Length: 557
Image (cartoon, rainbow, N blue to C red):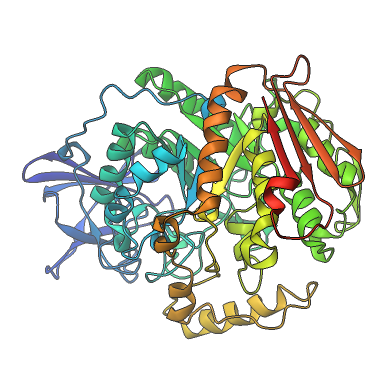
C-alpha cells in the first residue's frame, strides 16, 4: 500500500504514486529542506527516512505547493494540513473471537458520528452501544468518516480517503469504537464514497490522472476507472476498501451511489471490490458484507454470474417511497410515481416496486425483475439520512405524521423478511431534524452550496432552506437523548418488542412474505408466505387518534 509505513521506532518508508512527475520531495514538519524521493517502477516514488509515528510531513510534486499525502492515515490539522504518520500495529485489539455476522442477521442502525451524541465523537458513541444492543440492533452503519472540509459535514465531501476525520477522534477513536462494538456483539459497517471526491482540499490532480473527462458525473469529471493509467487508480480505491477491513476490523462497507460511478472496463470497480474483500475476509476468517446504494432496481448488483457484481445486498428505495407516500400523501419530485396501495404490497412481497415499468420522474423505464433476488438482499427503511436530510427542512416522519400513525409502518419494516435499516433516533420518536450541513473555508464553495441547496428543491416548492454553513444548522441536527431516556416512551418500547419478535420468529424461518390489501386501508403481511407463523395487520384508514395504535394494528404469531 502507498503512504507512510513504520519500519521501526525511528524509521519510516513513504511511498507516493506520481507517474508524470519529474521530482517529488517530502517536507517534514518544522524542516525547511525537502527530502528527495527516488522514482521506481510504475511511477511510484519512495523514501526511507528517520521518522516515527506522530511525525508529520507534506509532499511536493514538481516544486508545487506541498500537499497532504493522498494516502494519509491521519490529517490532524485538517485536509490542508500535513499527514501524520500512524502505526496501525500500536493499537491492542480485544476482539479476537469476533468473526462477523451474516447478512441474514443484520438489523442496521445508521448513524452520523457528529450528531449522534452531544460530543460528536467515536468515544461518545461507545457509551450508546449497550442501548443499541438492548434495542435489538445487530449492526451499526457509520456515515463516511474520511477526512472532509472543516468539522461539520455529512462526510460525502471527503478528500482524504484513508484519513479518519480528526474532529471525530481520528484513527484511534475509530478503532476503539469498532473494538467496543464487537465486544458488545455488534457488527460495524462504514459508508464509503468511491463515486467522487469533494472539491475543497482535493489535491489528487497534482499527483496523477485520478480523473478523466471522458465521463461526467454530477460532481464533474469522473474518477478514472477505465482510461489510461487507470490501473493504479483502481488499486488506490480497492486498497482503501481492504484498508478499512484490515486495519479497522470493519465488518462491511456500504458503497455510496454506485449508479454514478462511470466504469466501462471489463470488471466494474464494485465487482472488483467485492472479489478482493471476499478474498481478504476468507484470509482473516471473518464474514464481511458489501452493500451498494443504487436507485436503479437492478439485480445485476447481487447476481453471482459473469458480468454481474456479486454484492451482498443493495439499498432498495422503493420500500421507503411506497410507505412514505402512503403515510404523508406527498406526490412531488421523485414521489410522483408512488401512491398506489398495490405498490406497498409489491415492495413487501418482491422488494422492487418498479421492475421495468415507466418511471415518470426519470421519463423512462426503471428497473428489472427482482425474482432472482432474496428478500434479505433488499436493505429497506422508512427513514434514512438521505430521505430526511434531502428535504429542505430535514423533517423526520415524526414531524410529518402523528406519532400514533408511526407504529404500523415500524411493524412492517422490522418484521418483513428484508434487511431493515433504522436511522438514528427514529426508534424513540426523535423530533429534531437532520439537516444538510457543511463547514467549507472557501467562500466560493460556501456560496455555491447555498445556491445549489435552494435549487435542489424547485420540484418540491420548499422555500425555507436553512443555511448549510450556519453552525446552528448542525447543532439543530443533534439527537435529543432525553427523549429516549424518559420513562414510558411507547415508541421505543414498541421497537424493542418488534425486534425481539423478529429475532424469535422472522429470523428463525424462511425469509418470504405474502402481503395484501384485504379491504381498502387494511394491509396484512404473513410470514413466511407459506404456513405462516406470524401475521401483521394494520389499518391505514384515517381513524380517531384516541387509542389509535391498539385499534389500528395487530401482530399475531
